[in-house]
Image 1: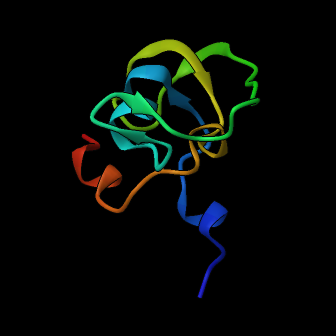
Image 2 (image 1 turned 90 degrees about the vertical axis):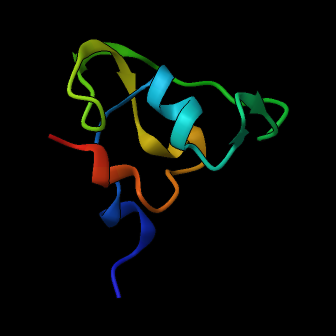
Length: 71
């Protein structure tokens, strides 16, 4: 069995992170009180759009099903 990080996309935009992240529920954040993330512009590996992205771990990793929407 692969570790969870090996099953995740490398880059995730904020919109997809809010939708699929484990630290979000219907757009409400409930992750760590003090957490920061570094963003850069690249292609989101969930929605495929070019926009600011960060690592999936910054959203508590993504829930199952995130990769079913990939084109």
